[in-house]
Length: 118
Image 1 (cartoon, rainbow, N blue to C red):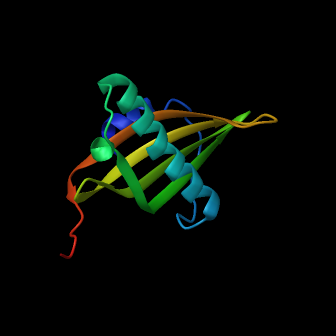
Image 2: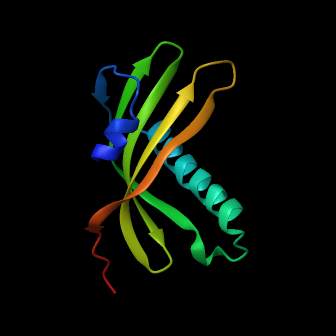
């Protein structure tokens, strides 16, 4: 986890490593990328899909259980255009009848490109 992401982690609870291939974790990772895209579109007013990031797979995952919520820490591979990179997402999920998610952090892993075969 990057130092900036650690600073944004305000829960102070215990982090538990979880299976990044768990379907629920993959759903949260995809949601985080979709939420990032929607925020980017709203800010940049993009019309074309060229600027969108697409989730390819989750690499690592952990969670922190806090009273009434769970914070997920996910490292994922995503492609934007022709290049694939690693990203870090931090998602807070409030536990209620209909879970509410908040994207707290979505940032590229600097200097961590994924090799893509041509």
